[in-house]
Each structure stands twice: as C-alpha cells, then as structure tokens.
Length: 475
Ligand SMILES: [Zn+2]
Image 1: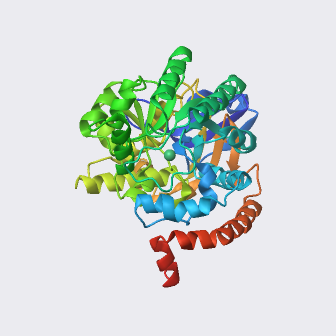
Image 2 (image 1 turned 45 degrees about the vertical axis):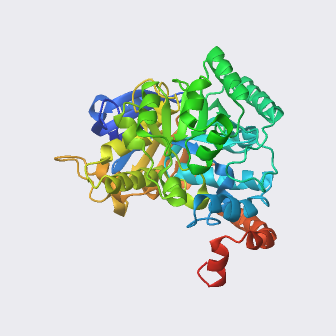
Image 3 (image 1 turned 135 degrees about the vertical axis):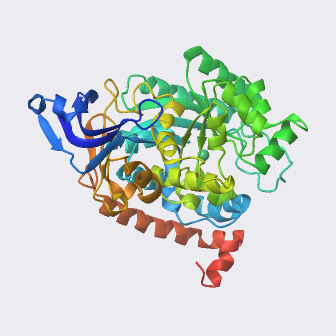
C-alpha cells in the first residue's frame, strides 16, 4: 500500500446520507482506495507512508460540473448588470482582447484556485478545449471532463435583433465535431481525461448537426453537454427559427438528444413540466448558482430537478459575474437561495448540499463508477479539511457531526488543507504542489492590466452601466 491517511473523520458520501466514520483510515494503492474503515482495524505497517489526519475531515474530492476557466482573467470585469448587457456590452469588449495564451494563463489560475478549494474534477466547456487539457489540466494532475464547444453562429451579428435568425454555418459545426472526435481518440485510455460533445445551445447549432451529435453519441455511447433554456434571448431565437410555440426542450426531444446521455446546464427558463420530462428521460442537470444569481437574478432549479427524480450537480460557470471557483461556496449559495425562494429553511439541507458537491456531481458527469464517494474500488480523489480552521470549529462528533453543517454554512474552500487526485497530493499543508501560485497570480495580473488597458476605448464605447459607475467613482 502506498499511502494511509489515519485517524480522520470521514464523510464517505455512501448510502443516502453523508456516511460518517470517526477515527477512520483510508488506504491507497496505485491511486485506488483499498481500505476504508476504523483505524483500529488497520495495520499501519502495511503502508509506505502514513499521514496522521487527527483533527482533519476527509471528503470525496469536489466536482465542478460546468466551468469556462478560460475567462478567469476577466474576473471582476462584468457584474451587476442584466444578462444581455453583461454579455454584449460589459464582458464582450474586454473578451475581444483576451488571446488564446491569456485564456490558458487565466485558466491555470482558475483551476489551481478550484483545486486549492477542494475540487478534484472539473467539467471544462471551451472551444479548442484540447489546449486547456494539454497545457493546464493534464500537467496539473487534475481530473477533467473536456467538452468541446460546437457553435455554428457566424461572428458578425451585431446588427441583428432578438427575433432575427442568424445564418448558421454548418462547416463550423463539422470542424468542431472533428476536433471532438480527435479528442475522443487521443484520450480514449487516459485515466484522468474524459470527453463529451458540446453543442453550445439549440439556438446556436443547426438541427442537422444536433441529429448528427445524437447519432454519434448513440453509436459510441458518449455523453453530450448542452446549455439549455438559458432565458429570453434563447427562447426568442428558438421560436424564430423553429416556429411560434417551439421551445428548447422540444428541440432537444425532436433531435433525439433528450436521453440519459445528455447533461443539461441551467434549465432555469424551462417549465416545471419540461424539467420533469427531462428528469424522467434520465437527462442529468447542472446548476451554476452564483453565476445565474449574479447574471440573471435567478435561483437555479436544482432542488426541483432532484425532487422530480433527476440527477444534478453544480458548477462555477465563469469567474466574471460569479466570482471564485469554490464548490463549497456554490452549494452554500444554492442552499441559501433555495431556502429564500421557498421561504422554507428545510429546503436543501447541508447533507443534500454536500451530496450535490460530491456523489451527485459525479453522477451528473457519468463518473460515479470511479469518483464521488469514499469506498474501496474508487479512485483516491480526496479533499482534506482542517477541523481547526476557525470556520469548522467546533468539530464535535457526538451526538452528531457538526462538520456537516459547518462545511456548507460556515466554511469555504479555504478550510481545505490537502487535496489528492488518483492518490497523489496536489495540495499539501495548504500549498499547491505543482506550481508557484504567487508567481502565477503576478503574471495573470500583469497580463490582465494590458488586456483591460487595450480594451478601454471599446469598453467605454459599448456604454454599459459600468461605464457610468466607473466615472462616478463606484468602480
Ligand atoms: Zn456555460
């Protein structure tokens, strides 16, 4: 055995609750969990390295089921304005000056931030995602679900109104499909990289390409990840393209995508009946609480989806608007928003929030046979929390485990002290092992100053409310 973590409090997340074990040991060999049980039943002599985890809580590595890490360099660049303004007049003028290298640089910081806050798996959604896998996720040792964006919208469409139907360029879709197939081939046998198709949204991809994705996904039993029912803009576009009364979920159903291979992000503009249909069809959902709260002022319908029998996980989406890549922060935000939306403190209790961050996130990404719980046979993807961190105090185990509510309602990912993926430490004693994070932050800051500076005229000309805010000394 390579490594044993002894004397820990463990939330295994097995069964229907959080599966707590006290005074527990976790044994790891070749990246697999080979022992999970009471320290009293473990022979420490079996392990090459023994790490005493007294005053530590071990949970399954957290799952970020939807993220665009390439936008991390624009954090703080667009917020507090309505979605269309956020996208077109606040974020876009800055994003135009972000080149491919900037996206990689920012993504590296975003992924490291996520890992330092307990995340071990990220579902990355990006165009040319291969570069992110190759230069960020793989070298950093992080588990990734790489989703290659398929988008057939031509670039120039500024003069179109919300009901004008832009031309879709099927060659763009064909190129993206080719990139995706290359990824499937390249990473077929990779332990930490899996791949999914990523038609961005049903208003951005032709029905022919959507059907082609369905055909390929069925043929090779692959997953498909789509942004679904994101709001008024998408609703108007779908109606304009497919006819009055047609909705995003109808298009998914008509093109054959609405089955258990589909991961549907957002769903806040779907109706309750549509969400029920998707849940019953086995579609998995991802909600992004901070992002959708910040950009749309909406509570993601995650709890409703789970109550309808669906599987759901959570994601951080992108840094501008929502803030940091911290899954504990996401489930706290979701729990609080859901309680408020229902005026019911019983809605989304801590144990359920923790399941969304771990085992349910793994199920949402189709990775639950290898991660999401702490049990023999799964991979050793673990987050270790310092129970002496002020937000985790008091950490008592009788008559119940205060770590459960404290982890959700009190702590953030800052309480995470160590993180392992495949049994390898990525964070140890609070320090990221494979990168100089301070130097990286400085580089991102330097480059961000150049990007924001170059974008200044465009940003001012775009005239979002943030321009006024800046001129009044509010930003
Ligand atoms: Zn997204």
